[in-house]
View 1 (tube, helix red, strand yellow):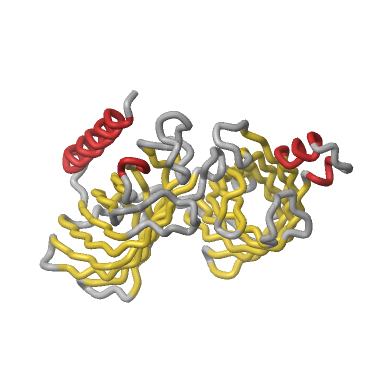
View 2 (cartoon, rainbow, N blue to C red):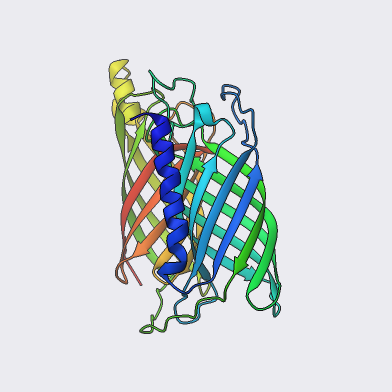
Length: 352
């Protein structure tokens, strides 16, 4: 299918979502326009001759039991500054909003959202070899924004602020140099906030425990259109509550990267198992929202299979607690802002 036709269908999908939003529910709606420029973090980036922009429409979702965190759902269209090579992106992104310094009709708004974005013109060896940034039609998209919101009457509000949008396929396909767009934006809201939905009381999850995570990851290995490799991990850790929804965590992660092991076998290097192994102690935090946990970890490599000198790794992701002891998660394992692999885990609380 030609890229142009695919892009037109994406735009039509976004328009359909915009038209359907008011009919879906009587909710507070908003529209925003983000204007910035892609950061050229690597000298081999293709030419970016234009500024980038993100156009969004969204609606406020009901909170649960009057929680202080607000939930939004947005349809977003992205233009990366070179449509002929980089194309467009589109996503439907849920986000969390935290409000500070709130008065009757004004507050400081901090939002964090994440979703899967559909990219119209990823790298293709035959039809689009110049796109050495976006290697797959599906990409992880994340957006952080900070803005001051000022109400104008009862049903209208305007916000001014800045945002940062990031796109990466988690190194599941190459190339994956990543897209980073700092922007300034204007947001207009109309309608009143949706009332909260009362539900059966949720007792919360205990944050003081010993636990273990078992992970399976996947990534490409520096070769466009090359094979994907697996990475296995095991991580015992300790969690300690700092505040009612915030926990400190410390642990040790052991993982084996099959790509590095395959390279060691092909080069007939000694100790193949050791060549593909990684060991890293880490510390981190987890912010708990009902059954959802937002996780950030970082620590030094004691042993790394990856061919780079950066000795600190980070792990960013989300967990869902199915039962009081059982949870699952999805993360990006990275170093120095560059993704190593996507990681999916199942975890168990050994103590409570």
